[in-house]
Image 1 (cartoon, one colour):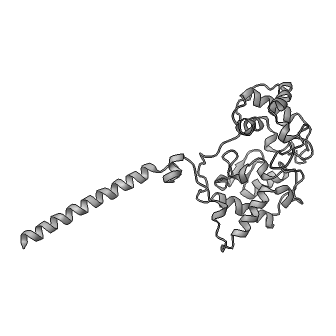
Image 2 (image 1 turned 90 degrees about the horizontal axis):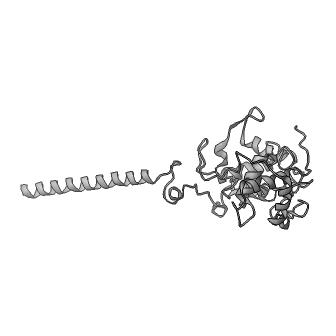
Image 3 (image 1 turned 45 degrees about the vertical axis):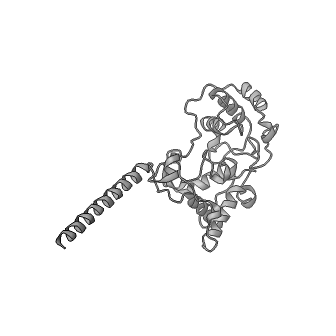
Length: 274
């Protein structure tokens, strides 16, 4: 009987040791599979954050209606918020796929705010950033802070940022910026506008064919000269990362600079904040 008890005790001890080692190994594996954002599985494997999908919204959640309205505002800004927009652009004109696209992504954007802005010399909130786009890129008016439009936009962008903490880096976000822009040739840029078939979507005179199908690149329907896209470094980087559709990254630095310079040389609305 004594031998049997001793055997059972030894057996239980061995099982505890095995379970403990397995748990430790599992914890190590989990830790090793995490990326810098603390994400596991597919997120760690791709180095990207997996954003929540609109179809996953709970229809019984009272916030859902506001988030859906924010999506509508984002995708069709010029029509849904026509009283506040002074051109024929939408947020999606630059932030493709409703902000889900890697280039100029809105996924995790709330992590960037509050943010100090040297250009304005103040600390920006997410609401400030939205209104900055409204008066510059949209050449329009600010959303009142307590308006349905502002609540909808903030709710939508917050939903896209679910799981991303304030201040967290966003390695999945492609930055549209060319740090060292070669000296541009406007004449070459005009030739590229035709040879790269930009006019098919954006019109012979840059007037555009639709806010999301081919936004206006200059003229009264486009962004004003205070918009971020009005900077050569930004425009050249954006063109290189996103255009032509289907042949992204096909433009050389020189070609992107030439095309950007040609576009920005054209007349556009003047931002009254200058």
